[in-house]
Image 1: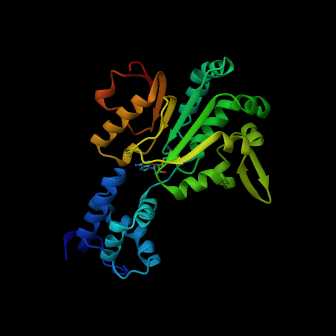
Image 2: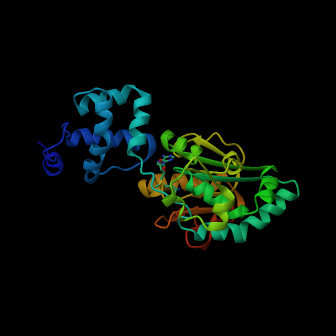
Image 3: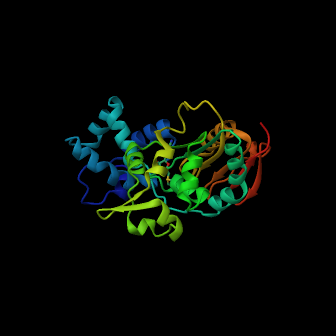
Amino acid sequence: MTALAMTSAPREREFGYRAEDHRAISTMVYDEVGILLPAEKAQLVYRRLAPRVRACNLATISEYIELIGRDERERKRMIDSLTTNHTSFFRESHHFEDFSERIWPGLVERLNNGGRVRLWSAACSSGEEPYTWLMSALGADRTAASKLLRKDFRVLATDISSEILAAAKRACYSEETLSKVPRPLRSSWIQEKDGVLQVDPVLRDAISFRSLNLLGKWPMKGKFDTIFCRNVMIYFDQPTKTKLQTRLADALEVGGMLYIGHSERLAPSLEDRFRCIGRTSYQKVAA
Ligand SMILES: C[S@@+](CC[C@H](N)C(=O)[O-])C[C@H]1O[C@@H](n2cnc3c(N)ncnc32)[C@H](O)[C@@H]1O
């Protein structure tokens, strides 16, 4: 028995989970989506994978590893089960304030003059981030907002996890989750029907939710005016962060904003292309 299995295998484990099993899983996950799963995460990975092994009617983790090597759908399910989707409405709210106060008025003027505006919530999880973003920019005036949303304005929200994207599209949230939404915005944008609380279709229809691996190909052609890419790079190593940040920089218009998570930093090689204008808020200054 290896050191990993000896230190982290509780007696009640249903399947054996050896250090080499963890290495095989973590290599596959790293290669596919960039998420780091060091040996300390073995117990967590086991807990999340055991239900999948059971659901596939397999007897061992080795059989499961063999399955995900050849079955893309199950590999996707495995990745779904290993992603951390923690998020909330108005999380790190200074980003939404900065965008609404400093950036949005110029974009509204552009829209009213017939120009185009493109926003991207990259790694949007269950949707709280892009819905907060739209609500806080548009404010509580539904009629004015609906008029603006009919202009050349698109919001893209992407994530790797298809399960979490389905939840984002449904946009049904609990009372507790919605408690962070200020009253006037909540009155305008959250509907209640048969005890279910759901984001208004005007906002839901304004956002295109799409499956996208940040490490894979990006089908988007045009550039974005602002990108939120928050609390996903924490799961990546430095080369992956630098590569992703370079691609995000390339995908932004000059003058566009990049907001990243509170514990994330811009790679030194990108400092010439951005100006830090506030906490984890960067404006692209050079192509
Ligand atoms: C902790 S959530 C962050 C949600 C939101 N941005 C926020 O800050 O509240 C991280 C999200 O990143 C997604 N994710 C992880 N790796 C990814 C990848 N390679 N490509 C796209 N999304 C990824 C996960 O599925 C998860 O929903």
